[in-house]
Every structure is written in structure tokens, then in C-alpha cells.
Length: 474
Picture 1 (cartoon, one colour):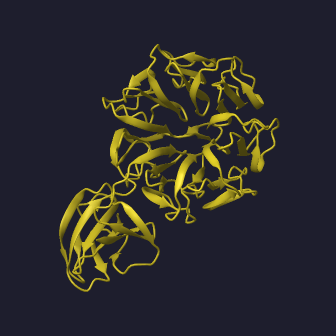
Picture 2 (cartoon, one colour):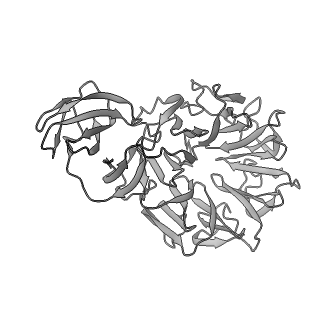
């Protein structure tokens, strides 16, 4: 049995009992969030003033919406206000703010619609900073585009690049990360390399020389396993499972016992040797241990650490008691010269069919159908967020007849386009049933008790088909 879902202006064809998909990756931009599902569909929510959600209406949303529904993706990176992605055919795509050429499309400006940014295939992984982008090819070569005032492209100069440009001739790059205005990468031999802004010691080179315009090795160690760049600091894990940090520490960014003292050398955090992964954001970080527990530290003014409060944490503290965390990402930062924005987080548990979000949600970046007040937020992880609770099987662009009237809804709603009574269920965006009954042509349903937000109205027609309509309650 198939049904139809109206989501962001598209009619999605749904198959009852279709497979429920898991998640592969979340990415948090400054005020938006991306989620990559196991069916290779990409979903986005939050701020869209620069088209970073992948559509050209430049309208913000508080629910996850499919990005190019007909396209499949295998990797994605959220920058400050732009997105870089790799499609299933290994082509490179980009969309969002392009003021410094960070999309690599050959021009500068705003590009809302996703577009292939460089001919050819064989792209493997992407990373995005505040206004620059990095990408690795399958052949181990490293490519960059965008803003370069601080040398973050690693091209040996400070000239921005509007098209993707290869860094040097090395073909042994293994992984990449982009900080706010700096970049880091690992080579196949386990060595760590860094370039870009270093005024706070974020490159870990033992100095605060403000500009490093070409990749330089960080120390001589060859036992680095992973690295993640935040806005002004970095965290990394060695092959022995130890956790390290360097850079700015004004908000407890480094996970040390005290704040305020920056460090220009990678220094071990604690003594544990069972760290599995780590993610650095605007001014806070998360790390997951081998036992699946989640740990966090740093700035927490919007509750983005999920500890239940807004108190900063240092040193590292465990978040809750769950032991099946698989992935967590921190919001990247964008600076307006005095403040850094990036105050939410998103992740998921092993085999989970829903996402977990925490922190600021004032522009819909949590995808929970709520526009939070700027002074409040989600202080503990809400793990009931889904890109859609109905598994998408195929996309139909043709319009369908039933329409919720009016939309937005205030106290009552009606459905136009039906010719006989229909059974209905009213659900929130996590799929939880709130109301049910029968609606006749011209009749109204009382929704005055619903809180402000986005909802789904599921209709069962007399011929056995379903329609699922999205509406906004004011």
C-alpha cells in the first residue's frame, strides 16, 4: 500500500511497512543541521538565508527536509553557512553561501540549489570551515576552495580560490578536517599536518605564529588516528586511544581542569586510553569511548552539551548514562568579529532510527518543529527527532489533491479535495499520534489544544490509499 506525504512542497510516495532507515552521519553548521541516512538520502533543517539547506526559497525550517530527493549522497560537510557533499556516483556537489568561492563553482555569490562543483568523479571525503572547503580524492590528492586570508587553503599564499585547487602533488593524504579558519589532515603514515590561522595555538606547533600558508607537519609523531578542528582549537586521538587538545581555552575548550590558559602544543586530556572518536565545534567538544559512552566539555550556554544545564564543563564529563552512542557532531562557528555562533549539537545511537539533538533551536536548527526563544534551548538530548517517521520509497513531483485549509492553522482545520468521509490521525513530527477520528467533506477538526509547531495529518481514503499532509499550527 502506498500513501503520499507533502513535505516542503514535494509529494513523497510512501510504502506502508517500508524499511525504516538508520543514520550514517550528522553535520552541524552554524545555525543548521544535516543528516545523512542509510538509504543515502540527505536531510536538512534550520537557517536557510544563504541556501545552505539546499533549496532556493531561502526560508528557514524547523523540521528535517529532504535535500535533492532524487539524489543519493555518501558524504557531507557543513561549513559556517555552506554545504559540501559527495554524491553516490562520487561526484562533488556544493550549495549555500559562496561569498569567497567556498563552493568551488568558479564564481562568488549565493548559490541555493545544489550543483556539481567540479567535473569528474572519484571524490572520497569532504570537510568545510567557516568559509573554506576541502576534499580528498580516491587517489589521495587534496583539493581546496574558498577564503584564504589566513592561509587556510594551504596553497602557500593568501589568495582565495573560486575553483577547486590541488594542494601540492602529494597523493598520500588519508583524512581531513576544517577548523574555523585553519585546516588539518592526516597522511597514510600517521603523521599530522596543519595550516592556516594559528594565533591561539590551534595548529599545535608549539608557537602562535598567526599564519601558516602551506601544510606543515605537527611534531614528528606518526601515531595519530584522527583529528577534528574547532573554531579556535583542535582535538585529536592517537592510535593508543589517548585524547589530545591544543589551542584556545577561554571556555574550557581544551578539556583541562582550568580555563583561560591557551596551549600551543597538543597535550593529553586525562589518562584514559579507550577513546574512539572526537568532534570539536565552535567552543565545545564531544568524544565517544569504546564502550559507547558519550563525554563532553567546553562552553554550554545553550545547553548544547546535553548535561541538563547551561553550566560550562571542564574537565571532560560523561553525558548521561547511555552506552550505545555512535556519532555526535558539534556546531561549527561563524564570527561576526566579536562573538562566535554555533550553539547546538546532533548525533545518534547505534542502529537508531531517530536523531538526538541539544542546544540552541531559535532558528529551527534542532529539527524538532520548534523555534525556541533565543534565551532558552534543549538542555538534554532529545532523541526523538526523525528526518521523517515514514520511510521514503520514491519521489513523485506531481501535486496531489487533498490540502489542509488554512495553512498555517489556528484553532480548526479543514481538508479540501476529499469527496467522502475519511478516517484521520494527527501526528507530531516524531510520528506520535495525538488525535484521531473521522472528517467529512466541509467539516472541521478542532486543533486548538495543539502547541505551535509542525504536524502531520494522515488520511485513510475509502479506496484504501493514504495521504499525509504537513501543516503548521500557529
